[in-house]
Length: 255
Image 1 (cartoon, rainbow, N blue to C red):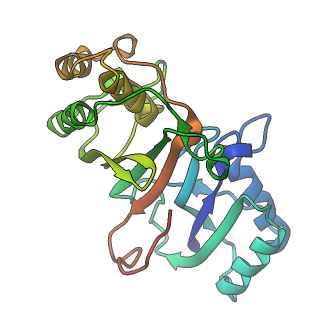
Image 2: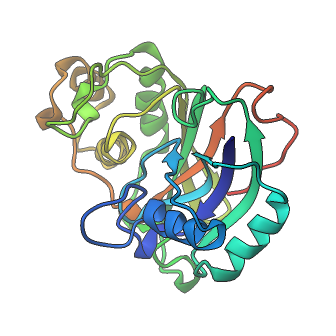
């Protein structure tokens, strides 16, 4: 039996989603908790591999169980009872055996959050960036992302991917209260892509690069031309989309 699990986590004290030789990962933490309760080995496959320090308001994963779960809601309760404060399971539900959390997803949406003044309640959850920014130029540059599909310039080098093609459908900067938020949605993202985009767009906002320079960076298809990565703690995976027959669309998510 295959099940989907919906979860959220604060990434500050995790080395990222993916299990590694050393360090505390979201995947390993969840697998160990589930194995303890189900009394069987559990392998979890995530929809997105967030990096160290990156947060998730909504993340999905799938796992297989040797026997049908008698009470998924009770399993959610028991998991949350033993998981640490920075990782929470929202629900567990059955799916067809061939549904893959990563490959069945139709889009991912990320937000990058920036504050201009120190806020102790947003420590490790927003990037404190004080220089003045030209929001109009940043949005003009961000709009160019919808016109291209090859984003090699914003991918970590030496990554094991077959293609650098992504279809971006949303890319915009907006103020929300005292927080400047970059919202971006695409069918897939490359490793380090959003943070590299944010870092380069901040260069546009501070006047280090022009909108035309930003377009040339896209066309260069070379990571050396783009700006530095923005810090991980400002980045949130906020939504993962699936066909309605897998995840019903009226289920509200949170960030």
